Image 1 (tube, one colour):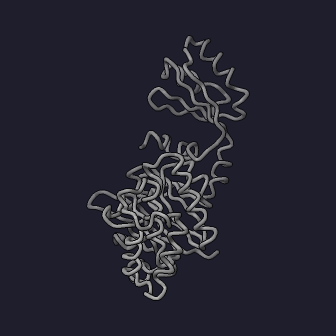
Image 2 (cartoon, helix red, strand yellow; image 1 turned 135 degrees about the horizontal axis):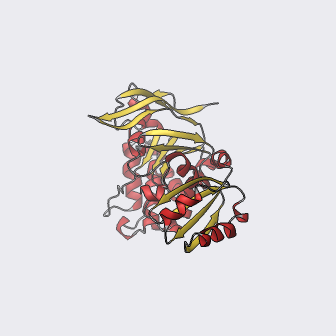
Image 3 (cartoon, one colour; image 1 turned 90 degrees about the horizontal axis):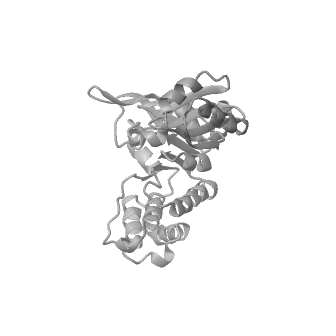
Length: 313
């Protein structure tokens, strides 16, 4: 397989703190690859090394065939970046942003305006191109940042938490743009996110990172298939007592607690909801709520880390 990004034991340390620890990744060309993990897990540090912003302490990485330490110029010419934090000037128009970045990235003058027109059409900002960015909505600003990162025809687009802080409707519109980029523009996308539904919808493959280490990596479908279990989430008035007693049940494959929330991993969960309620009543435990879910990436994260990513946020 043709891999456009490869890392070999890449590590970043700050004195006694290890932000990224011996990470090995292989990102297939023309794929959407997700790096999933909570805030502080090392996602942004990893991307910063791949983008040549940070130097690895140990290990190595190549992007589009170029070493991130020995060939930083060639790496930068091969990539576009959309950072987690906003990086737009409110007193410039959308078109002026694209003109500035086209100039910085050396897009030839004779094709610059044509390329800007293509990007404006791609990100659906043609009618707003000559208005100040301060008048843009959050979703429009994010689309402009994505377009800016594409102005020089990069082979790889890095998206660091691309929909952080956006409302659900705007988030889904950004998902559509990312899919279109990958499928119709031949752009490999490497994105970090802690939204599991985002990764499930967009990514061909995902790697789960926690405390600077890759715990597991595969397609979302395969990762969910490995669980072979449904999740029953319960809120009860005596969680410690319920957890203690439920561990004795044969059909409970695993059980996790966070505050007052209890998650039980079971097979054929639809047949066990009533039984769990009766079990709680038998032990004089009041069930406030009970919910059944089929395997998702949140459950995968729970399996490998022992906690939910919402809790980690």
